Length: 91
Image (cartoon, rainbow, N blue to C red):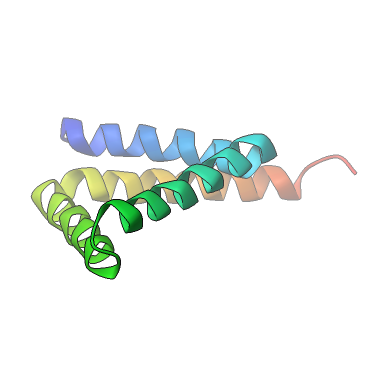
């Protein structure tokens, strides 16, 4: 296991858990994501600027594939644990 893979697992588990169990964090995260898309659209050349950002993110994923795999494993693990916890909650 590489350091990038372990970092991806931990980061994704923290973010996924926070998004699943905290409505405040979810609202803040959605607002920040929408703001980032708008700023990228305004700062860049519209659609071309967004496509450039998207291409940059894909290149970074290809440059660090272990981090991406770790993030996927972490997100799926946290989602699985969250689903089990949600199904066993007290009613």
